[in-house]
Structures are given as structure tokens and as C-alpha cells.
Amino acid sequence: MDKNNNHEFTFAEEPELPQNSDSDLIEAYLTQSPSQKAAASKPTVKKPSIVQDSKYKSYEYLLDKFSEHVMMDRMDFLAEKIKVFIAGSKLNIQLNRHLLEIAVLDYFADIYRLKDFHQIDQINLIKIDAYTACWLLKRHPLQLFDENSHENTFINEKFVCTYLLSSLLNLADIDCDEQSNKEHIDGFIKHLYYHLKYRTTNPQTLELMLTSFQLGLNLK
Image 1 (cartoon, rainbow, N blue to C red):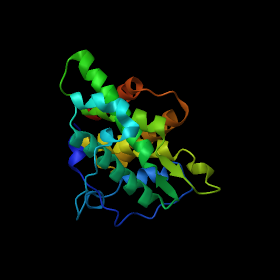
Image 2 (image 1 turned 180 degrees about the vertical axis):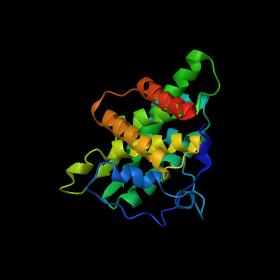
Image 3 (image 1 turned 90 degrees about the vertical axis):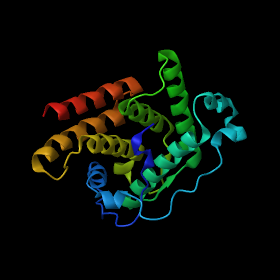
């Protein structure tokens, strides 16, 4: 699974964010220091397996390939990332836990089929991010309650953009504050965010986009 799953997050020291620009929220999240993103105190309390919930009986077959704690770890990992994003946004956003649960179960259902078809035990990080992002975009677990916030209509797309960029930049160990890097990254953010808002997305197109971005970083 995603090696970043061991990360936990704190809600302290979040940056003050302007609310008038589509890219401000994304850039502010990406430039947070590790200490702002890493947990400093209590570990996440694990909840009962969602697969055992009567609402999700149709997903029980997932236990053939994935343990309960793996699925719950993925749920908690994404929930904590979303909470950090919400805390930094200064907007009236709430996480719909039920929609996040469905997104995570759908993610594992896709990974189940992928592993079964290709007869593999593990998948790479880019596939993990692509399939996760796709289901977050479909289920929209972030709910915006602010009136007159048209510029933040695409709040789920903003979060997915931060999630994907954060993962890629952490892998590449890129300094976002360096001017030459910032210009290239800003351009990619605009294209990625526009694609997430207005184009049909699926795991395959996202995987190709992320692979291309990673290749560009390696060739630099």
C-alpha cells in the first residue's frame, strides 16, 4: 500500500489562505512544512471495519484480498488529509464520512479486480493515487456550506489536486519555493485542476498524466 499511509497529520499552524483564487488553496497546502503536515501527538483511533456494516455487505468479498485494518488505515489516512485541507481552507466545509467510505470501498473494489486480472500482489504508488483520486471525484465526500462561494464550487477537485501534487512532489523531493520549480509546478497545477474540473477522468487517464509528470521531473 501507499508508503505515505503511515503519516498522520495535525491541524495546528495552518496558513492563512486567501479565498478568491482557484489556485491559492492548492499552493498553500503544497507549501506547508513537514511539521505542519506531520502528526505531533495522538495516534488515530481505529474504528470498526466498515465492511462489517450492514450497509456495505456487497463489499464483503474484498476481505479475500485485503485485511480489515488495511482498509480502515486507508480510510483514516484520507480522512486526516481531508481534515488538514478543510482546516487550512477557512471555509465552511464538512467531510461526509459515508461518501468517503463508499469512495474507499470502490477504490479497493477496483484494486481487487486489477490484482486479480493481472495476477499481481502489489501495485505502484501512481496507480494507488490515480484510482483513489478517481473515486474521490466520483463520490464528492467534501460538502461546501458557504453561500456566495462560487469560486469554491469545485472543492473536491481542489482537494484531489492537492492530494495528487503532494504525493508526486514528496516522491520527487522537489522544493516548491525555488522559483524555477515554482513556475513549472504552477503551470502543471493549472492544467491538472482544469482537467479535474471539466474533463472526463478515469484511473487510466490520471495514471498517464501522473506518469508523464513524474517522467518530466526525472528528465529535468
